[in-house]
Length: 120
Image (cartoon, rainbow, N blue to C red; front, side):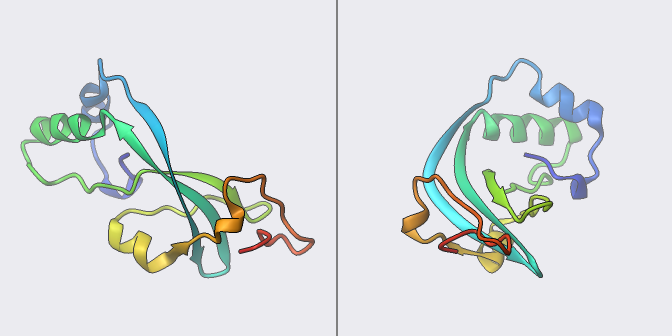
């Protein structure tokens, strides 16, 4: 929920999360993300407790609105040997991704010999 680019004090992040219970709920919305030659299949999720966490963290930092809201998602697949593609904003999600082919939902997914997500 907080990317490394934010460069926040780890103690403040831990304190903001203390006592909160985060529940992750799938949305059923899957997107194909491409960044250069890297590709990933993600699903957007809803995280109960996320906004409370952000409010606590911004309060502790004394900077309302200072913590960027990263799009909550789970990476389902990457290219073989790949890493997830960090998405730091809604604008970045929009520019780097497109809706996944409905044939990919709900799964299972397979990779072709070249490592591409079939149907992607």
